[in-house]
Length: 558
Image 1 (cartoon, rainbow, N blue to C red):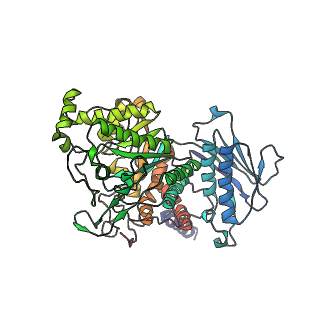
Image 2 (tube, rainbow, N blue to C red):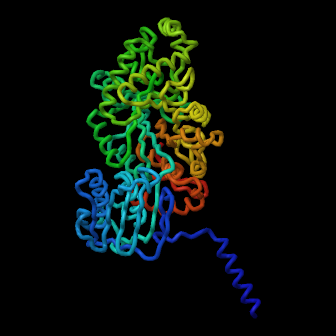
Image 3 (cartoon, rainbow, N blue to C red):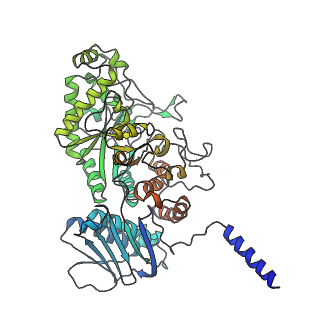
């Protein structure tokens, strides 16, 4: 009898051990990206109407963070939480924000220390940025309904409990980016803000705004009004895949006024995100040259804003008038964007028009250049010198390596990791963004069940397992890898819903790649935490792709 009982117990144990891990929502921290250190303790802190927030209200940066916390909590709970100065007498049931002057105890200026007990929540950081990242983790310790902006829609029985924890957290990389192409398809300001909100939720800190292309110029430049009068509009757009050769007959376009750009930049600053504008050169210039053909190399050419995708031969001519034009454009851009970096493109610039241009060949001879690749390096270097004189640095796609790298350039390695390796070995800063791992316009599941995409395949797990630091680099060279970025190219993304579908949850995985310590990464645990993260997306109305056995429900609009 005893042996039968023992055998039965063993069978039950084996059965339970073989079952998929069941996740009990809200009973354990499910933070994405995973903190550097998290210790779960006994008890919970109960948020209620009497909870008081303490902070230095005289510090605008701190007050901005505290206000965002209060607004989110109040919106979801219906409370009206009070904010008191830190010098006020504290009671229990409090949330306290502190800028810690002892910065030596932190790994990074973006680090934070979050301590939750039954009596109080304490958030300390060396900067307001650290405090901001701390509240992102704090939100994720609460039920997903905390992201609901209308408390009347929150279930009445929701308990606003925060588990007792000690979190010491800091990012692995200083550059944690997401890119958005608004040139192939245009997205309104409100969606751009929403895109920034999702970045902030994941502790991403660089928004790469791709503003100019062959298919559209999207930023108002007051000195050159034709850029948006002509360059922001195309007379038709490719329908279906690029092999279809089918076009609609609808004029398509749009652009951001300078006031709208300032609005987006200010909004991102509140979320501790730097906006990096991209003004493409010397290639991808069709929309600009349709507006001002005198800056091209082909006299009398009828330049057109392109209606399809791909690489086109149109390229800026290296004339003095062209450099004046670009410098004037960049002067207005710098007035709008305080970012240290300006992205100047540099990719996919065919040299045919330079090869056939008598003037371009004269420049090659005059400057004692070897070929058109060195002419591109000359072109980029002149632009870099201008931006450097104005206190800015350039980022360029890895083609700027061809013909010699501009002296202070940062390279965005997209054609694999080789360009990044080469740049780091030359002691140039690198941002890893290879097509193999972080191009979020690629398919993420079976092509037959997926909405139309440009091609390729990058699964959620593949992104999660990406390491931005190549094995080929030694410790010193690895220091030049600033981080990584996910890219959203919008050839087949006609709406914000489609962008969200393609970006998330893959951008969630990338956030853990660039934030969490490498030795903390665990795919199984990430997938477990993603189940609650999907609940957060549902509350926010995010059209995330929900993977199950590598199948994703069909998204209706292509």
